[in-house]
Image 1: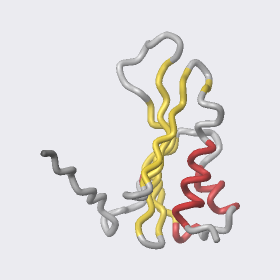
Image 2: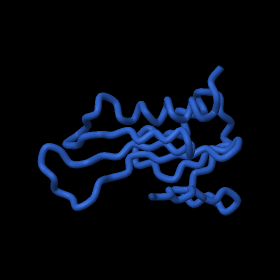
Image 3: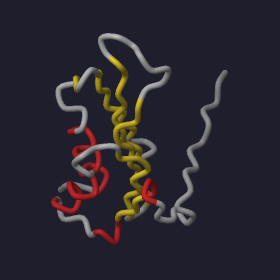
Image 4: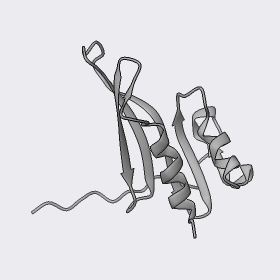
Length: 112
């Protein structure tokens, strides 16, 4: 059975495609422990920007999916709804929908 986390992970991973895009390398960053899933892009083959670009970033909190960033022309929200996830369970933080009830409280690692 597909859990909410597995669906989000699978759909976000698709945005990295083969690992290359228009003048960019695409890297999936999939964190099952903290239920945070993203794809980042870095310029390739020539680095022209100082920072990488977040292509898409989503996290799962309880029964909600919070899409923090989506710079694609094929919105993640649409892909998730096609998988049967109700729109009421998806929060578009990048579009200004409130996330105050779902803070991102990821504990800091302890170093020896």
